[in-house]
Length: 227
Image (tube, rainbow, N blue to C red; front, side, top):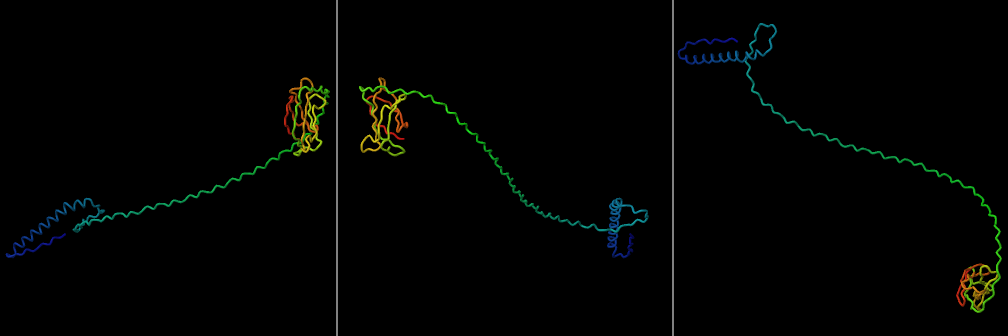
């Protein structure tokens, strides 16, 4: 940088003004030299060396710009997308087909013929004749009606009393025993032998057994018979 020499004006009236101007120029030059040696020298020491060039370039004085504060913008909050729950499809279970059980046919058993038993011959037990009638003791009398199949016994039906072991009945009655009363009978049983009290009498209708009774001397019972 070349410094322009200011011609001195030898004017006695402007002397103080020129002195002030010279001093100002000197101060400015000093400030430039201080800036050059103390400030620019530190900057050049940090600057890279330009190859083998021997020519030193003196940079022009550049005013330092005033830093403009940077406005920091707050970041815009982007909402996080909430994933929509996907419904899980549960497969419908397919029912297992249960095989139908086939019933096993039941074997039909072969009928075994039942052997016909050989009849065992029954020993004929000889029956005793009736003992003599004892008239001193009164007889046992039975009265009542006889029904056969739910109906009154017809006329001529026979009612008899038997003692086991004897060949003949101890009492006999023919229906009707009472005139005008169908199905009625009157059975008179006398004492046979000396020991007859408590004897079991077997009552039969037309030879078919119906019931048992106990003989007592002088007793009378109403006894309806059904066959």
